[in-house]
Image 1 (tube, rainbow, N blue to C red):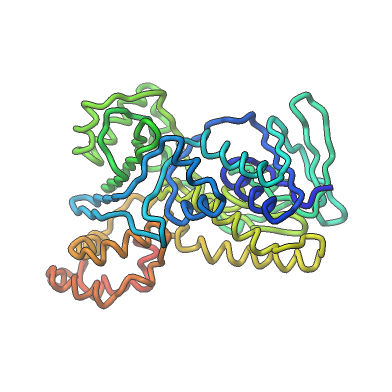
Image 2 (image 1 turned 60 degrees about the vertical axis):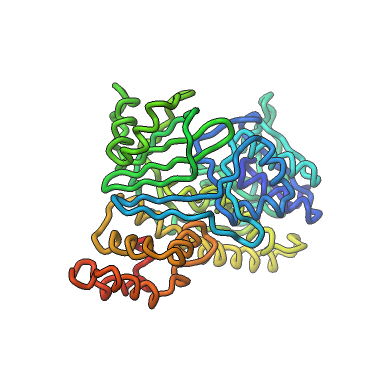
Length: 419
């Protein structure tokens, strides 16, 4: 019998297994695919996620894969440009975007080094129950053998179509549908830092990774679904419409590999835990990749879960309290970024938000604070409203009712809906 069975060995599951194993738990980590394996991902890890990699003792190995340190960020909203050094979180002053076949394998290896057993090519076919409590899993190995494994807790880290969430009966707490489609490809010979471009109806992210740069185009959901006849042309045209200066730079760059696409990006929050089970990563908290929060949030959820459980999973009553605490903390931690993601995914730029960006961009201090919020280092409530209003008045926004300081003053209550 194991203490913990973690289903899914990508960044959410492998990091969670590594943390549990480091605390002395008997951990089984299972993954349906053979490692190393790639997956669709923007790759980007914000500062709180980088700190998690430090805590797990793997940051040096991640950097060693060749992904560059990203120390500058720029965000172009229509005609307004915000640019600043990367905000720091303690000693973490850079962000990274490692390839997923590197990152996931490094984290799975960390789990094994900490004492976990790891089985890839092994699929969960069902959960084992005792009454209404999950007590283990049924596994199908690569050879087709069915195994029954028991545990005090089963953790589902098996992605958007989670078998654990489905079999455990995790309820959908919120479903905001899909707002965007995404197409991305890798480019070489493209000088770049971490860059974001937004215009009404379009969003482009530029993310340097090991040996290449990801350029991702976001359009309204389903717009790319009909791109089968000439997806590359639609991709390039979309970049030019949203970020024309970037499109000019791409003329001298080389696209490598295939074009990756996803016509719909769901936004769904499930119940985080129940009797004998818990969810981490996309299995329980899935949102649009436009804010590139997936890896960071997955790493943070693993830490929350392990901290909530503490040193013992055998006391059922105590475990139940700990799992409820985990769910509350997860929802509190990720609520603001979830709503901000939905707002951005609508791909609209209301006049007052453009005015807000103009006011922020006119102040180096406000720009730094804003990017700290984007990174998840601070929250929207940390934006000083008085300073923002003063900057807005200096910029002359009070002559237009749609961009007045009174409208901008709603930042304290509406900023999360109009980041």
